[in-house]
Image (cartoon, rainbow, N blue to C red):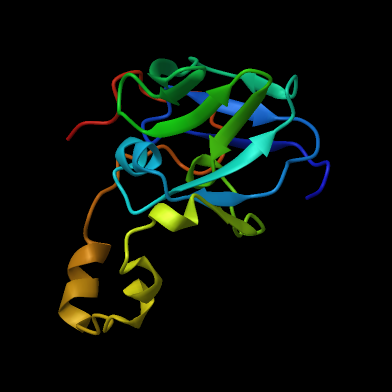
Length: 158
C-alpha cells in the first residue's frame, strides 16, 4: 500500500473520510458478524493508521457487536463502514472512492465461510442487452466517488 491520501464515504454522502498514511493488509472476513454487518457473504476490510483517519463530514454511528468490537455505519443510509477494536480501526474496502488496488490479500475466519462461497464466480453471467439498457436509465442518488463541495443533506429527490 502507498502513503497516499485516500478518501471515501457512505452511499448518501453524510459520512465521508480521509485516510492519511499507509494502509494495512486488505482482507475478507467470513465470520457471521461480518456477514450480518455487510448483509453479504463476507466483509471486506482494510486496516487504517490509528491516528490517520479524518472524518470530513459526519462520523459513523457505532453498534457494539461483541466485547471490545464496535461496527460503524451511516445512520442515514445504513452503509457499513468500520470495524473498530481497541487500538485498531478497519474501514470497509467498498467505502473507499478508489478501491482498484485494495484486492484482499488474506481471508479471516475461513473455517466458518459459507460452503458455496468459493463457487459464486462459476455461476453463469447475465448477457441480456435489454437488461443493461434498462440499467443505464436508472438515475442514481448515490454520492459520487470523490469529494464534493456541497451535497444535499437529505439526498437528491425527483
